[in-house]
Image 1 (cartoon, rainbow, N blue to C red):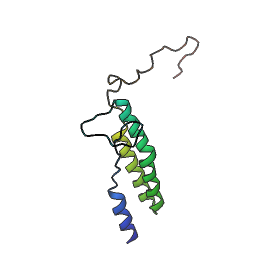
Image 2: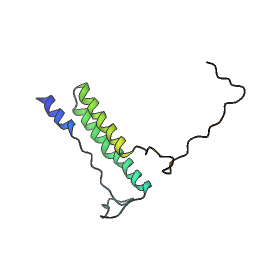
Image 3: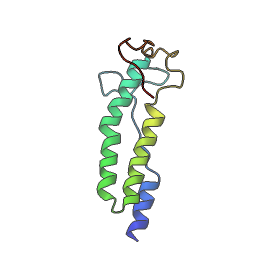
Image 4: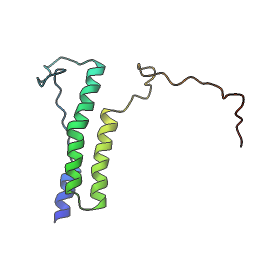
Length: 111
């Protein structure tokens, strides 16, 4: 019976992150959008304050290895959904990839 209750609790954790005005606790008014930087900052703050706390609580309640893995999967899914870089992140204004430098002449590749 306990395992059933834990599975129900773990099956549908919804992590709700409030959208607030930068630097305050005031909810973001309807129709107001944040800059990309502020949006990312709020997601990181939410991850640190809410997502990790929920994962910690989930892990404390989990008694089986499968339940603990499920807790970690939920966190990983949240990260993929909310913090993942876009596929074309270089074109989206991300950091450019490192330059392609050839190896120094005194180092040879041995196969």
